[in-house]
Amino acid sequence: MRRTNARKFGRVRKVRISLIRSLAYALISKGKIETTEAKAKELRPFIEKVVTEAKKGTVASKRLVGIRLTPKAVDKIFKDIAPKYKDRKGGYTRIIKTSIRRSDGAKMAMIELI
Image 1 (tube, one colour):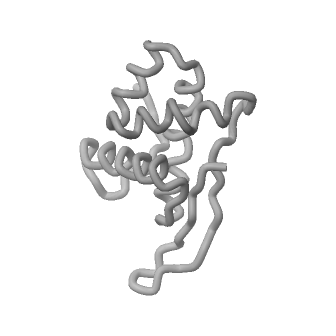
Image 2 (cartoon, rainbow, N blue to C red; image 1 turned 60 degrees about the vertical axis):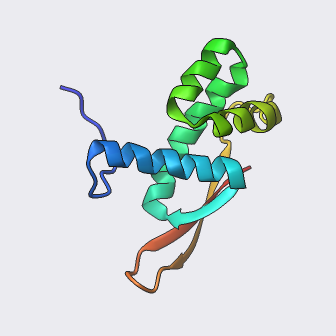
Image 3 (cartoon, rainbow, N blue to C red; image 1 turned 45 degrees about the vertical axis):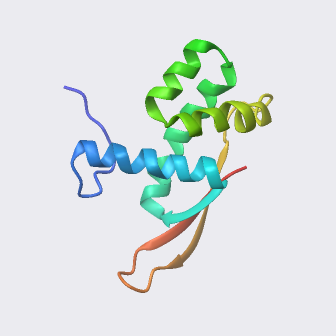
């Protein structure tokens, strides 16, 4: 039996995956986004793996990234983001803790591509 420490966010698997994908798309298109701290921490490994795969630049890696992201995001990550991190071994994102949300008291954080 495989154990996972992934956060559930009170959602079923399909919706949780869709949430992470939409956050990843927003981060890739805008460069930085503000979300809850838990979502930012869950998004970081997803983005790191995608950028690492995109750095290879092969057709196979483009297909693997295409499974996880939309075609617009794939184009942007291969043309703009991956070449920028060519010489970097990892750590493509930064999480900065910001304020607490007034409505429900959730800890907020800003995640950005370095």
